[in-house]
Amino acid sequence: MVTALFASVLIAIPGILFASDILQLMGTDAATAQRYSGYTQWMLGGNAVIMLLFTINAVFRSAGDAAISMRVLLLANVANIILDPILIFGWGPIPALGITGAAIATNIGRGLAVAYQVYLLFGGRSRVKPSLSSFIPRFNIIGQLVKLSLGGIGQMLIATSSWIGLMRIVSIYGNEVIAGYTVAIRLIVFSLLPSAGISNAAATLVGQNLGAGKPHRAERSVYFTGWANMIFLGVVGLLFVITPSSFVGLLTQDPVVIAFGSTCLRIASYGFIAYGLGMVLVSAINGAGDTITPTKINFFCYWVFEIPLAWMLSVYLGMREEGVFYSIFIAETAMTVVAFIVFRRGKWKQRKV
Image (cartoon, rainbow, N blue to C red; front, side, top):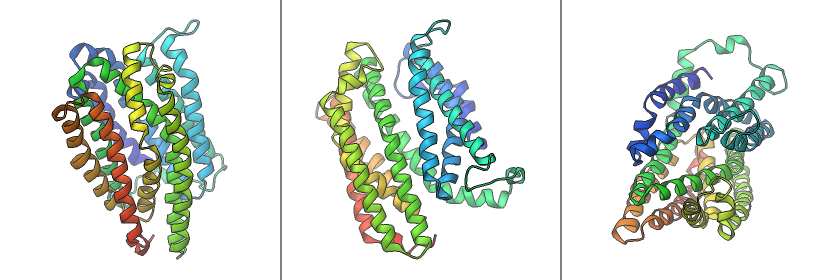
């Protein structure tokens, strides 16, 4: 937790001070960057809560309390859903804060979830029972954590920067396309939260079974969770394909933005079933203690393949913004294929957890 808080400060300071500059680097014009800088400041400045949220959830999962992790994420998202319309559009004495209100709602929801996590940790209601001495920095342990987490950090940086790279290409086609793309990605990320929980469960099961010397049971658990995730994302993806405008319309009333956002949501959802399996496979390999291989998979599929593909389809082949949207679907499917090949080779079974 101490390490997570330290890392969050390194992100928060430039995020608060240079929010507008960061947005302009992503391709937005000065006026749009200024308009959305408040949102960026709140999201980057408040990243400590998301750091704590996922760090403490990882503690619960590693102790076998995966159900607690799911309840925590449910609380964060329900609070966010309730607060979003109140803070965005205003209600009674609460003023309309626009897009900045969405960021504030997200931080409040996550903050409530972290408060609940702390209550569970120190209230003796979880298997993990830390003491105050647990918060004394132990630099040898911190060094081990940093070494172990470098692969995971690399995966997150690669995935996040790929979205920024796609945003840069999308920005060529105007602010309405950027807004539609942003709304669609927000909906996609929200819909993937339950899948992330399922995938994390697979990682936990792999670690526990490998630690118990039962690699074949670990493999069976991965396939079971993979099917469950594919079914869930298949249903969600089908809804997004059939009626994307219904979901995009929940976050914006601009008909042009709804049109672009609906197109992005529909096309990206074509790969949901495949991605459901890919998420589980990558998490399983991580759970086996191999964070380098998933980093290589992410690097190849998102940087080497997805971004050049998006440029070729949208600019060279003249597909405009739809070329970028199709690159998301194709790259996620490619990631699943590569992850499946790596997983089937079975080298992860030989790792000591």
